[in-house]
Image (cartoon, rainbow, N blue to C red; front, side):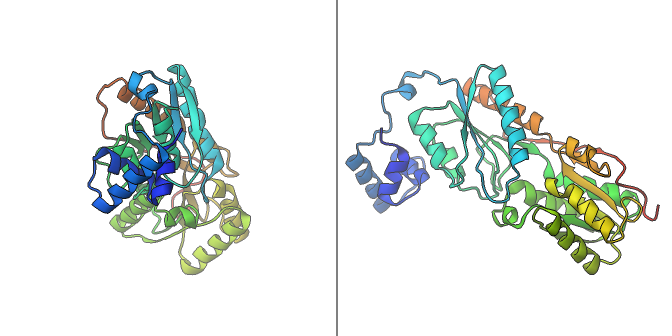
Length: 335
């Protein structure tokens, strides 16, 4: 069976451009449209293959796009996948994983072959290259994440901007005046991943609102990266007494690195994190944290997608409010 991606390769355009050119849903130049139409004719591509889409039969399968890109933390991806599979099975649906990171190719393939009835999209970027196809194709979708322009999309996520603000509010309330954010790996910010960028925005806004000295640094994973970022922070901000961590595997290595540099947690340094609650609770010093509710996000995404498949109305964007749980890693300044 000829797929939309085959036509895209032959015409030298993206699958979303093929969809636009053949559906007429978006303006495409005449030259591009003729090239796409010629490629479709040469390959024998048909927009309706006479199969599942025309008959209206359902596959009872949901696709889950979880691109395995640099900087992705696999345990977090696994949590989302398990939550989606669990919620889908409760509604008598199976789940098809799409793990390639090239963009919209996997979604285009699922759309054209009818392998799934709808798709849940993760690792959403502010200007995500998958959005044009999601907006133009017939496959219903839900995003776990919120792009810069969310009109016409169904999105659900933790309110990461509010999460960054909440961590800083907590530390400022304890009297801390100099605070740092140790963020995700650099490649996550280079891709303009939505949740990471929004947390930085919230952190920066709250630090400014409280009049705090602050900085935000990306960081890789592992003990060497943790030691390097801790040394840099203490060198650049000698008055540092508080840190927000948005990098799950770095929580324990960072506490260890600061302790090796003479900074006790929480005696000399208060530390909060945005991470799954079990990670925060099991740290060498239990960490005050805003939980990333992977199970709830996955379940909500499935619920929204099933409602869309049934024709029921759904909200455009749903943001879950952050909640901070205090543990042993934060204390009043100078405590």
